[in-house]
Image 1 (cartoon, rainbow, N blue to C red):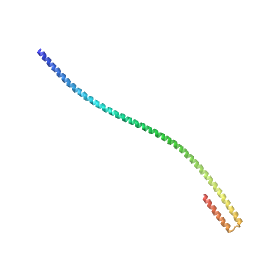
Image 2 (cartoon, rainbow, N blue to C red):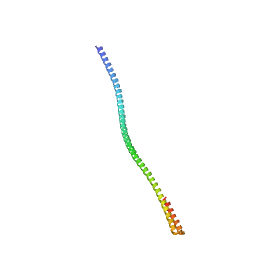
Image 3 (cartoon, one colour):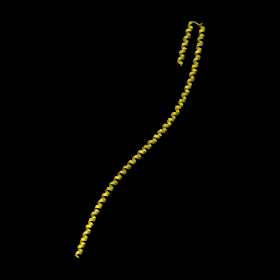
Image 4 (cartoon, rainbow, N blue to C red):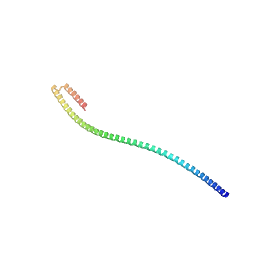
Length: 161
C-alpha cells in the first residue's frame, strides 16, 4: 500500500504540477487576451473618436452646404430682380430714344419753319427799306439807313442760327 500511496502521491503531485503549469499557461493566455482586449478597446476608442470627428466635420460640411445653397438662392433672386430691372430700364431707354428722335425731328421742322419765317421777314424788311428809300427820294442818308437795317437783319440771322 505504501507503494500505492506513494504512486498516488506522485500522481497527485504530477496532477498538481500539470494543474499549476496549466494555470500558468492560462494566466499567460489570459494576460495575452487581456492585452489584446485592451488594444481592441484602444482601437475602438480611437475609431469612435475618429467617427465623432467625421460626424462633426460632416455636420459642418452640411451647414456650409446649406449656407452655400441659401447664398446661391439669394444670388439667383438678386440676378432675377436685376434682370427684371434691366428689362424695365431697357424699355425706358427705348422709349427715351423714341422721344428723343421725335423731339429731334420736331426741332428740325421748327428750325426750318423759323428759317423760312426769318427769310420772309428779311424780304419784308428789304421791301420796307425799298419803300422808305423811294419815299425819301433815294438820298444818301436813306442808303446809309438801308445798310444799317441790312446789317441788323444779318446779325439777327446769325444769332438765330
